[in-house]
Length: 214
Image (cartoon, rainbow, N blue to C red; front, side):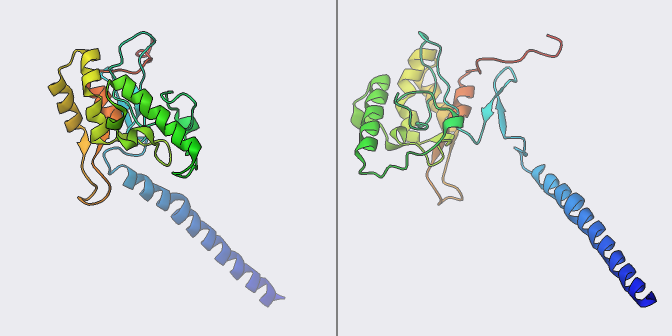
């Protein structure tokens, strides 16, 4: 009987030690280390939020934000790639509806959608459809790509300049300042951060909460 009780107590002590150790390591130490590592990077772990000139949250540096002008107002925004599968080829993209169409390159439905997007973008920018880059009319796999190609960004410079009154050279300089090269010099393609360009152009989000007490 004593041997049985002694064995039970030993197992109980071992179980308690394992439980406490696992709680300390996995419940306290590991989350604390992970949190600490997230503080090292510049963007940290709060969604990589970018703010406008007023200090208001304008969006995430990691998620595409396609700002649109109010009805009847000049369009001075740099626009991102298409999002989702909306019937309107230039419909504002919503991260909530991000998705790919899963249509193959030879699918006639996708071909018609691409043709409609190309025509709409060409009309918006005042150029022949052949000048519209491929990334402008094809969404990314997630539909949340925050970047566009330098070619698509340059295509939009004249319209942005006319709408904002900012000279084309200045707009081009802002785009160059927000263009990143290939990752590690050989992965991917050069890309332009759409939201950062719009913020550098002086655009702000539609609404902004006032300071505390207002």
